[in-house]
Image (cartoon, rainbow, N blue to C red; front, side, top):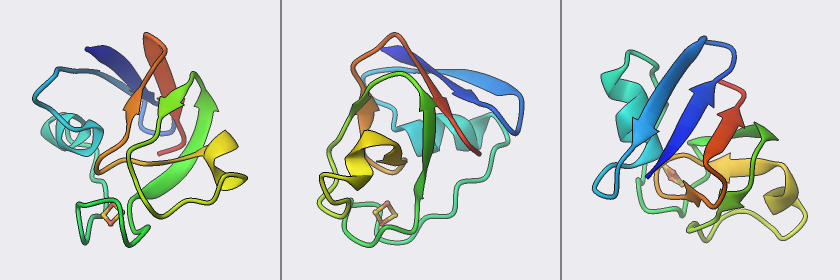
Length: 85
Ligand code: FES
């Protein structure tokens, strides 16, 4: 697992192997707007402020992958990911 800090909300959650980032944030009261939940539509994309994403979506371009993440399905390679939500 890894931790995600929702910087604007001031909420930090643990994301276990069975969780998604969006799911873990949702349980903690941080609403992530979702649509496809399969990494295709881009509805759940937010900016990454710190940490290294493990991209699992098929939406973002290589350029966008440097500082954005799809919260419905992507994960983290670093122990902590800080996102702008
Ligand atoms: Fe569609 Fe995440 S909800 S890409």
